Image 1 (spheres, rainbow, N blue to C red):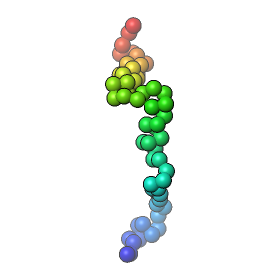
Image 2: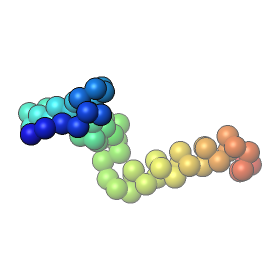
Image 3: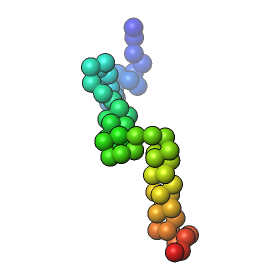
Image 4: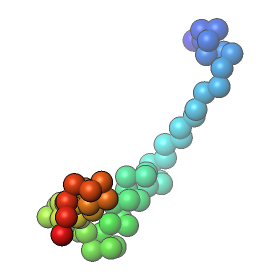
Amino acid sequence: MSLSEEIKNSEVDVIIVSSDEPDEFDRRHQIMKEKGYDTPEKVRELIDKIKLEMLKEKGGVRN
């Protein structure tokens, strides 16, 4: 296999994937389950709550 000059002369990111280690998504999913967001409905409620808070911060929603 040969590499182009651009690749030979530049920095690259190396990502190592291990079947023995959880990935970032798996870690986040586990944390959410531990915090009580263990069903799709609870996750949707959290997302809606966050969106509402973001709108309030932008001044788009008033209580």
